[in-house]
Length: 165
Length: 148
Image 1: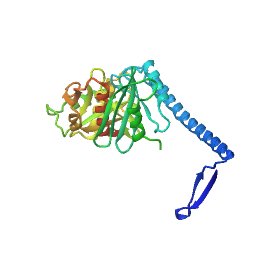
Image 2: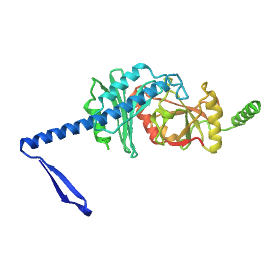
Image 3: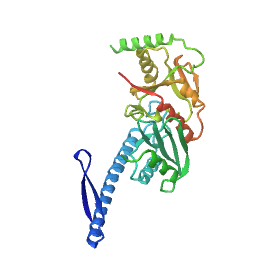
Image 4: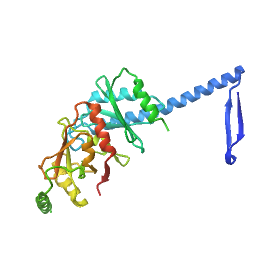
């Protein structure tokens, strides 16, 4: 394996890796991949952890009826468990959502960008409930069964509209 | 001093009642949803959860066309905030045109109590995805105004 360097625009240096064929090169490549994998795990662990913290804060602050100033129901333990399941099922390559409580006591994950992309995902019983607006006219909403992994429909929406920065 | 304050507030509430609004809600009217929870205000925008109706499926709003800024906040303080048992404060409000509600197939029904400008948004669908969809559209089209 070797690193090649070349002059880029405005004096910038551009480099790329060329995988070697020798056993040593393959071993180095394998170790590098392991390091990259560990780094990805650590990053995802940290945002998952912060989402869990946010969820715990929501459960505390929305423990009483009327927490929204109107007629909201308290967030029950079932909603917290459902949200934890959902957080665990999120892929690593998407942007980090916000955790939001609904007046019904459900917890919803929310993605929103400045260019009118707005998507919400929640777990209601054994069904995933999703709804989103993507730009001026594209709307998608519905329900999908949830078996510990996100269905392709929802994965496709998240990957396409909310990739990690 | 608390006596004077209470007297002044009841006087203001009485004067606020002397208001007139048309019986039907026009598409061009400004509709205001008062926001109490910091969860409804995210990154300078109104969250869709602010527009999700309660179980009774009647979302409380105010018709604030031709009201000064001061009057809009006063309506919120005296008629919405004071109704709360926990004495929570209004943090802001989400303003949008009535037309956005109508485009979503929702109706705005004037409810007169506790004030002629009070109204409820009805005709929400029963299923959650559809309901959320409408709330998202309302949130995307509303402007957030934080309480001064």
